[in-house]
Length: 93
Image (cartoon, rainbow, N blue to C red; front, side, top):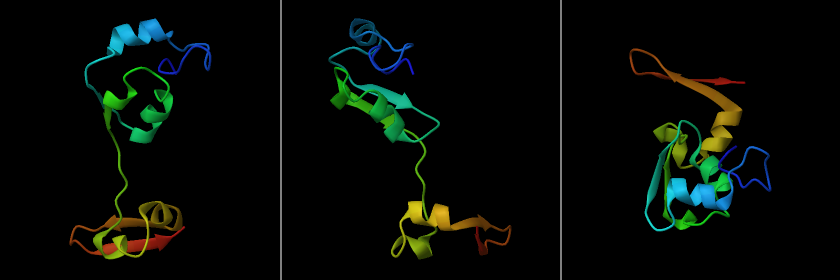
């Protein structure tokens, strides 16, 4: 929560402290274990937001389903896995 301004979270960084860590004029690259949108939302109102690039988890649907379903629809509708033989299995949840 330190990425948020202190006005939005008690553990947030002040703008000057944030700018000292992440600069105001250079590209910043985050390697994040979660969804990239999370970092973008937390840093939206900060200086240099346009130079922040986040690399993180992206859901991908199996190739057969990409054209008809979005990955968010698939993740909520089914659970999929690949067997050792490469066969695709989908289970409704």
